[in-house]
Length: 522
Image (tube, rainbow, N blue to C red; front, side, top):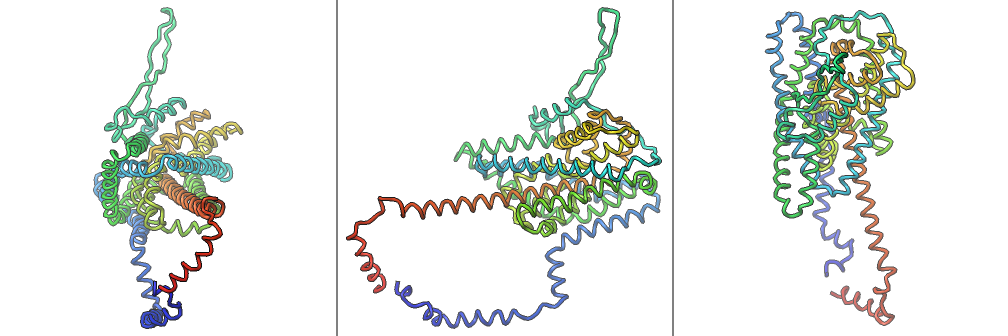
């Protein structure tokens, strides 16, 4: 109390030694930093980003130079082994990362806030995917990649996915949301195939009927695991104290997984370099493919560049009033990994690390939204599918009317939700769009021929859209919490003024100066 009665100027004077020291420190630090020191500091802070981007560039040059050696298929497999190892490491970490992060995220967020976050995320993903589809259609009509007489390369059509009915595709999506076996969902997903059954009508006419048959295919059912993990997390929160032990377990598991991710990140540049190089060596005739399908490739890449460098940053800037390219700079490691691995799911661990450490997104939001975005948000795939559909229509001289264009937009937006976050996942859903507008699926072999190029830019846009979604949700959460604090402070400041219970009699008010005098004496 005695210290409080001393004037502020006297307290400053009494601390003269400390203040004098604080005045000397800026003079000591005011020595200008040399250019080399500044470069070293920037390089150390962004070492992983520099190594990852350099790995992509070096991988391209290595691939082009090794092509001259005419390696056999066996030698190419051996050559690309370091890249295969990176894919295996990233896939190994996906299931524990997705399940644990979603369980802990859903358990740590209030159910009402959980619904708001999920609603905002789905709205953002839906709007951006629809915009991306529109960009793809517009670019395809402007550039017209299939209008010129192009030489169709001879591609083996055995890998063309079986065309499915539109209704069966959406039913498969719903079936995968509710897996019948959680263990099987970690390595298999449900899909519909068909068999022809002969029907004998009245003993005279025999007709063949195509009947859907359930089939399990290799590949994680990420969508089913996501839904289960979210519901399980909400159930744990509902338990209260009884669920705290399991919540702590999943939180600890999640943190340990992120430590493993940080270790894998330092191996990523080596793996990416060999992934890119091996893919270039593997292609039979890159020049011929670019000559025949160059307009299609450029159409897809330009559409992705417009969406990723203009539209997504513009949406982020309009809402947050922050520099979106600073946000993008913090994602360079994850984006380069997405380009190298061509898989949204494999890039998920590095994306979480970048968003949390470089862009200030909280763990609760990033580990809840990013796994959902890696499965649901497919901006790049939607854009590429619309370009491919218009490209195939132009190749076959089939004019598209307004209704067919709208059908392509809506179907691409909807089917991209169920697209697997794996290499060539978008091609599997492209057959749905072609069937919806009555286009032939035979030309899918052309799309598969250059999918290794286009799919990489698709994955980069998918991952970028997920990150911007997490950044916007962080902004909404911060703004909402600030509003709640302001409203709470207003309520607290209003109540003493208007509450009759706190009003004092006139006699008591005169005693206040005496109390203050006693405090000053002390």
